[in-house]
Length: 317
Image (cartoon, rainbow, N blue to C red):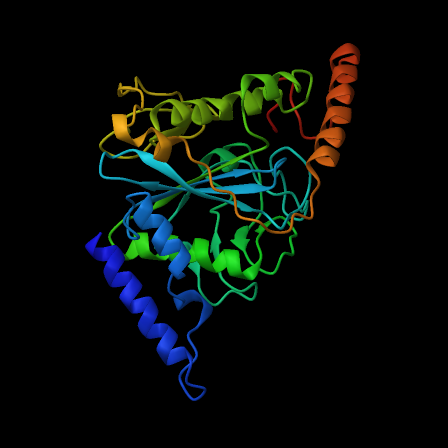
């Protein structure tokens, strides 16, 4: 709470300085968190500098920010509308397909882009080890502002500033990296079942392991890549070296007690705050296109023909 009060004092000072027309302009990447965000952090018992975790859901056009609390678990901070994303449900395959990626990505300080032409941004890290094992290509896939996308996840400028600031403060406090999990939709059993005939069903079922782990434990899982697939909740070898195309080693798998908030904190644990804002992509339309693709996938199964770049397991080759 001391840090929250200090941050609020800094915000007040910035407000005073900003009222002077001759005062220096603060660059977007250095904007402090707004008073409302700091107050919400304080009410939720979250330090502004605590570690962050982000989830993206294409169909819903939503980006969630989660913050760690003193019990080591992550609690929901806000859900932000994704103003725009390009492509359809499914992973990015090749450079120029204008498809927004899906998968498990790690963001380091070097991936922060304070001088992005799209306001402020951070690089998603595509292609990651899994993508490369699938021979997927592309570069400069970002979460950024300007509400324009050609393969990225685009926010409004104001929301991109707040998300950027939350990540920036976590890095300043020593978080070496944070995770972004990008999903096609909220991966409940019911939603996944809609797409059981879709060409990407098995890929999505693999991603669901990471979704379910976080839902149960409220801690982002450690994810490895071997045998051309993601492996969730493992202890990485001391060397940190795993061949994404090679055989999986005999991983140890940590066992956590499922998340259970303190008796007085159920409301904080269950609360979901959604920010208002524009969404270019309509969820119903996105789902309709994907369902038509699922029917096409059923035809593929019946005829034995495979779409270009796909295998019978739903993985690109």
